[in-house]
Image 1 (cartoon, rainbow, N blue to C red):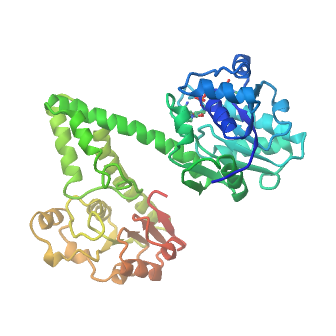
Image 2: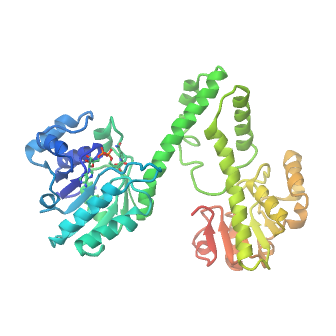
Image 3: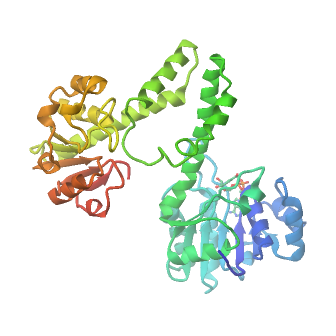
Length: 447
Ligand SMILES: NC(=O)c1ccc[n+]([C@@H]2O[C@H](COP(=O)([O-])OP(=O)(O)OC[C@H]3O[C@@H](n4cnc5c(N)ncnc54)[C@H](O)[C@@H]3O)[C@@H](O)[C@H]2O)c1
């Protein structure tokens, strides 16, 4: 990415704002920082950072000295010759856990009012962490009301979450994992120009996705810490050095530290994951160690199966309840295996049959004549009449069905579902392709 000089007004000289203002100024932009705290404004203008971060002192003194960065309490003054506003104000937790949007709302109104006094085109970039939907439902209306402009013409708005970590924020700022931009093409172009000096991938996504990525990242980081700590609490009791275990664990870049197992879809199952989780939880109980995160993983998995069963029952009821036929396309626990042990699809079929639905199943890989051993015993215990509900042909399973549940991505299965056009198509797979996703009754299991 390469960009030109941008006149930036940056709102909020806290941890994120001070580092961002300093680093942008150091890369050739002209930055005016705005804060309601006179102490922070005075500190910046005196060349002293209002927050402590390695490497920030020298850099800030340099850019304030050169005139590339200054600070003010006056919004109107800061917006005189501004091309772009960067919003870095706080979004703290309210007492009930919700996000307090008071600072973001106030700044949006102030930017709007300042823009009413000029005709200069402007882009507003939200860097603060805000819940999905905030930009469209809160920030855009305030900007439009204040400025009298309409977003999309001479006013553009982008969501561009920040990923720096306190303690290494200057280094993180110049080497982010990626640049995520939510917004229109014009808004994205302005953000690309601003961050033209960064050498990282750029992802332009829907605004709601950009807002949501930040929460996904932080939730995942918290989950990772809890995961490692829970294991270590159990392993310590078992005389296992958790540091050694995790040192080796992270070396696996194929399945552990990788995109594997991170696609939204249906529940996990199979002959290993549930069994081994239960085994760990048993060891924990025997050693009086609570492992709430790992326990929650099993509970969350079962919850998903029940929720999906309820969705299917609701879809049947809402259509009058006359057509109770449900086609399940895919029965094994994942694509391209005939292993039915602990398959969440078997559990789902069991619930639906128990609720009196007319379930018809097709799986391109499962052949009842070839099932044997524990696999056969498992399915016989749960679906004793499997041979009666299993169809060799996807079209037969789909015949007259009100709902199709599609987990297999086999070409025959997808083509048959597209041809049958059932009133409700529930996608468990997420990679079935456009023809099925454009069917009228299409729904993703989690999207
Ligand atoms: N701190 C981090 O490591 C980090 C990392 C990534 C993202 N974030 C997100 O970035 C945002 C800012 O975080 P922070 O830690 O820098 O917050 P902070 O509380 O340190 O700074 C916020 C600043 O905004 C100022 N402010 C409040 N209202 C204002 C107004 N109307 N006009 C101008 N300035 C105003 C405050 O005086 C304060 O200096 C938050 O949404 C946070 O979730 C933080």
